[in-house]
Length: 430
Image 1 (tube, one colour):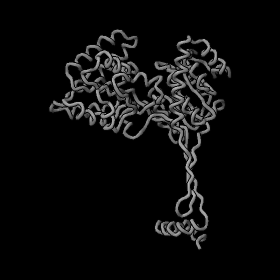
Image 2 (cartoon, rainbow, N blue to C red):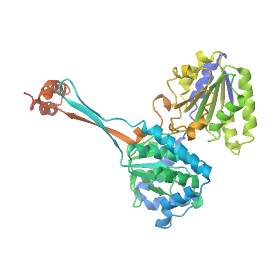
Image 3 (cartoon, one colour):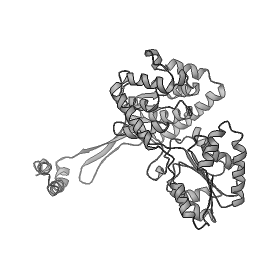
Image 4 (cartoon, rainbow, N blue to C red):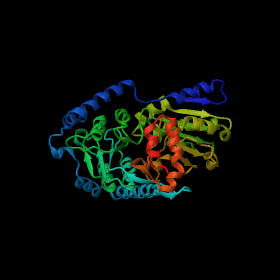
């Protein structure tokens, strides 16, 4: 764990190293993924059989072994403990309500020249959802990815998920039932993303692929962007907590560890103006890690990538540090969180006040937990219904409106050296 202070003479240099710590894919992954995608494109189902046996220890022997049926998902849902079923239903209802409010409106208006202009929003035909099946088997992620697609109006929802040794997570299957997933294929990794993009004899291609995965899945999405749409290229999880000394150090320690336990390369950062409080949080983290079933992962993450930054004036100094880090998750555990939020330009999602831990946002708050990492919050947003939709503009002119704006179009066409463009306009002018 790194300890920095803005009062130190070399703070700027040390802070720059924190910002530049990418913690992401190495060059070797890109080459491996390129080979996998090339093989899937040429080999189709045969390649999927080989990779699934090799990486998951599972044989796609016949048609029945390729898919997880809707009946199996319903059975998993029915078999849940009542509290788990109710929690998933609550999460789904809140996610659905939040994303329904995101639906964009079509535009249709006539301007001063009489030209009719506007745009129509339409959902893509099919969306693929990647659902991890190894270290991270999260029903919450399935809901966060599938429900916005359904709200957007996507007609075909396809899940790909690895099932190591044939095993699947019943909570994930129950979530698929709640979300109304159409197909679930027992394939994972970069090869599954390739199958969704290119299609195979069994798996029809989709238009958009979303969902979390390991470095190979993220790299496959990056390489296939353009063949398919993607949500984002996601890296390791991040949390930035801004907290004053009035907080319970145990609470803040738990908040920091909520992301550290995701992956050894996750990053947890605390900014505080109280050195004594910072020391208490560090002590609480050491105690709590020893009690976690995920302690090995959390310990590696905190030791290698954890950061505590002490500032002299939280209100004055924290906003610039926040915007430079552009973190995936930002907690503002201070007296006036809204005043500080007004100064935040770059963050994936913001959690206001001492009673709003990031973990609630991962499950039941409503906003999407698929968020930009690796400082990408500077230019991108979390998953929304818009990731499953596209906008088509339209134009309609009559003779009067055409004559009003057409001459300028012809002038610009000539200026650009495109005479056919100009003639297309000039033939209609009166």
